[in-house]
Image (cartoon, rainbow, N blue to C red):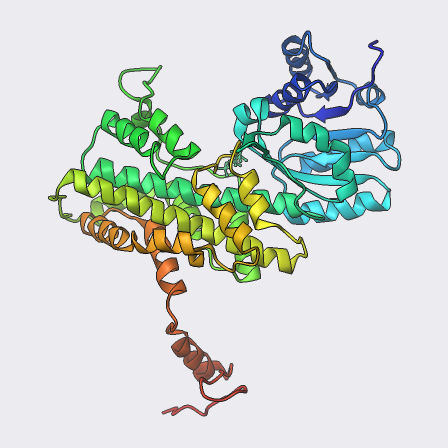
Length: 471
Ligand code: 6PG
């Protein structure tokens, strides 16, 4: 038995859990690991040999290894696995100990667990963690929420293990209760939006302009040296260069066009509807993943609804430049939607979020990291109560000069019969947000007409109902 106790115990030694244990250990923190699956425990002990790491597969032994107050962190799938880990460890914990859920739990579950554990005087933190396997191993972006004093217990470990961007840690305390899991949910909503936009660009270049995978690889590689510099653009470039290990040709052409989802993007759209925040691009991204799942229906419909689409006939190089500009425009509006949702949620759920801090911790380690986040962080630093990113002076001038490009790209995609659902939704978000007047007066008139739902007037205060000219 080692003569030191372990600072943190990790439950769930899948790739993410194991990598995070090794990451903490690399920074000098002794970490214990627990998994019911002995092969995972053995894998941790093998990879962690020479480090202050110890994997076990008995709960009691695991808890005994931990220094007090004990910190038990879990990286297990959202839903019932989180509750069963809590139930398994709870009998061995005492008041003042801390449980951390590092998975993608729904924020309402986190609120519930927080209250239940509070009754037992057990601290609980909900921490969103982004960056995939590599992030967990070498520096993720971490989004902690819960009691601030509980966060202080793990702050040195989290700061050491987190990604760094611009000399700063990509982790900071975000707010009470479920603030961390909420911010991670919105991160994933933005992730869905950006992935949809990039895949539309791919569609336009592949089906519309007939470009090869190697041309696509070069374009995305070049774009990653521009204002589009981001993790998702970088990996997209790499995807087009990946050969198929199982056969001839490139892997991308062998992957079935049905996008799966674990639900975090859908949750973002669902809660945005509950708190009444428009998320045009993210909603479209969720709908397009759903549409992709109807593969066999789409195959049949492609024969019935066959149309002769217009072929691209313009200057490819000029068009590709405009496409880059349109993608940037759409990416900005996607972040704007996510940030506006966080602002609303911060009031609704009393999270007291700092949007500047959130943009900063998203600048490294996470899936949506991008050069653009520096401008976003600056925008909220200059004006912490900025109601929408689109009206920040720098951002507004960036998008205004690109609006004509996005219009042209969408028109061309429409002519070619290519669905640019995310990009069209981004433009609609922009066009509606900059519309001093929207046709919602007609919606109100119709509601009042058929249901006496009343309306407000532009010229007088109050609530009105009209006896419409019923025939
Ligand atoms: C991250 C990712 C991560 C996971 C997504 C995948 O930030 O590291 O978002 O959490 O890859 O949850 O989500 P879908 O399966 O829904 O695409």
